[in-house]
Length: 536
Image (cartoon, rainbow, N blue to C red):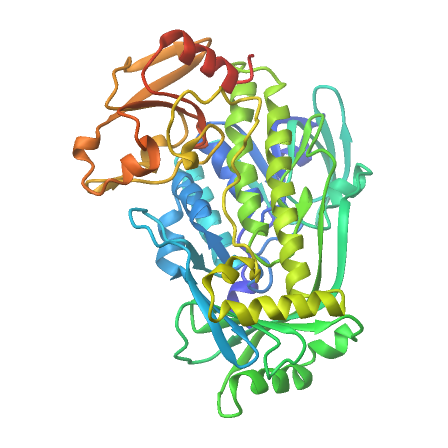
């Protein structure tokens, strides 16, 4: 077994809260120290918000679990101060191949355009992601940031009140009570917090079973996503192969409905399946094996008064398309700047309702795409299978059929069309940078655009004049001035200008576009700032 599963990352220590005569009140408490919970704590700590993380574990999650991390997640990780470590360790990839029976029908490139700091995806075991996030949290602590983490602190009860949340916590040395102005629940798909508050999910539960096997082996397969429909080694089902660091390979095999899960997980049953796929001569060892089914469901509302849910505790999708952890990191990205403004008194509490509406929009998009992928991969009728197989046959020779092949629409950031924080689009510019969209990166000489847009409101001007600093009702907006004359790659023009001669963008702290116009008009942008901070 990998030693990383055995070493405590945040071992239990007695805290002063356990000896306090009355419950200690914290600004924010995060439940759960997985990738989403740790990212939330880091994001808040970087903004000087006092935050406490509670987890009933004290180690990384067992097994590689989530492994595919998207470009948008890497952009967020850069802002959190640990993106380079993920990139250095991860396996980069942007290409995939689709097989039907024993033949390749086509391949694809997720990032045909150049000019981004980060690749389309990396593969990296979740335990490394948690380790790197934890290292970043410790570094922030060493710098004096107001962040704590307590391992083996299990939340046993949650009570919500009008102005705070009260938690009863169990430890190896007995229980104690603590309070928070705000609670962020990041405690996973089986969220005890959600159950304690009596909240359920709405959506679909799928009955298909899949085997995950992480195997250690020397292999010369390229760093690509390979997906099989009806392969000879798993007839009537599907299979997936991904490369991870340390010569670890992720293999997913569809098993069908009526199986004995415990029996299928035994090595004597797993190994023959893998040998049939990889070949009898291939030597490998099992690192982790699991059987999973999945759901495409979400909470009706992600905000329950002072308790806010993020990641798998709020929504669940099938694994096809790498939408679980990536959407959870986007939840954090959306939430934390808003919570900071509310805590500082620079925005009304109702701004947090936009977290609920925007991230429900993101969850519904993920659920819709994930459900469609699942229906294509696992046809529910003979006619559906005939249609699916015809599409696969056509895709080998005809490009028009390839977009209909659905082996998992891979994770992309949600565009918040119709958000209450958006101003009307006043630029005849590229659709990819319309209000509500996440800003695409652009090379700027030896640097890139996105780091210059991180963590603050920004007025991005392209061949347009505007004030260097704009103050509006407690919100400070700083200008970033660019010109297409310096844009040797033309990426800035393609992604932000189109045919317009100039542009001014209001960018939110999470790097989403709030407003855009062809020139700076003070009243329009002051209105846009108020709107983007929930004041109109």
